[in-house]
Length: 535
Image (cartoon, rainbow, N blue to C red; front, side, top):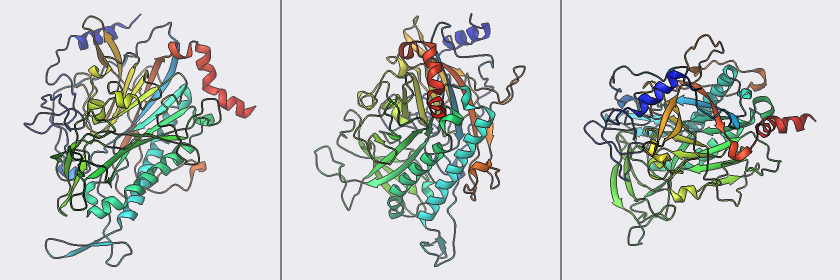
């Protein structure tokens, strides 16, 4: 029997008119400007008006406007729980969302003495000179700091809410988590020289991270650790007439904004899993690569073979206004799905194995893709998945809202798990407070109106005492001093100022009746590899 408060909550949602402020669909607005769907826009139609103002300058907190007071907002009642048939075969899934302001990273590039190896000397407007540390040194240190903070988040959250309590656990971080502010780059050469370094370092760090949480100690764990976005030169960008659009005199850059998916599962069983995979973002928003202001729309480009149905043009983006660092970026990225073995060798399979956990396929959408090239609606993205009938949809973003229409023809998706790098940009304001960066919603289909709808679910309280609910936030220590367990000594310190972070946790019962058939199969999966290792 469904709890009465839950019934009332569902009825109130169904009876709420979809007014301008009843649901935040597109994530990003400018005053007196229509909101474009998906990470602040990027074309593709679907314009919706909104009077909610969200920060517009990723990576530069100095120019971030404040979200206005929208009046009293309430969470769903704390007793609200996911609804699932009592006869269903259930897999208990833990969702750990690492919440972090990735859209306004703190500037931390250091001034150094003139003549320091690798330093760059800049002449200021007043004629004085400033020496900045090498961009390579800065990137290496910053990636170390993101790695350490994420590691602390996992340690702290797992101590508070043990992942062994679940059949499988997903741990997520937001889009742009690994980036530094674009305003810290002084010229195009710096942007290009660290692109491959950034990608290599992030891959190394996330692989190192998952290795610290073995399955037999922490249960089955899949890590979706946010994205890293870089820019690279490309000669395969064309005008509509087929001529070269990117030339030496007028270069257009290619965006790579991807997530490295890693896991702690066996690589030696019958499932033949890759050790890690790359899921790329297909579309570039006008807020993805900006420092001082949003990007402008540039010349039209020919269709990109990666997705010829998407409108393609050049974004003109000011990365650093003081240094007049302006670049052109192709809107539709050519970045591909990749899979690798444990030795880092690329596999021939060009699909993303979203069945790492037997019976629990999942999808990933990175920000604007969710609006214009979703894995639930876009045939080109769907073709890149091993299984298109997935049960969990992970939306990793910085400035977009969950929207029910994405699930109109995706009846197998039971939950949308959203981790956003902008505070409050992903919430239905009638359900969830603006203070949150992430949201988990259960997806229902209303036969009366022939459409799906979303029910936001509250995170678990941080106390196991059933008589009360404390705050849902698990704070992460971002200070220089942090006491690690003895087995993990020798970790880098956080020596720069870095944004604060917290983790919130959800417990989701997922119906796997159609894939695993019996509850005994689910139970056996939970510990099969560890029992074999002990034997």
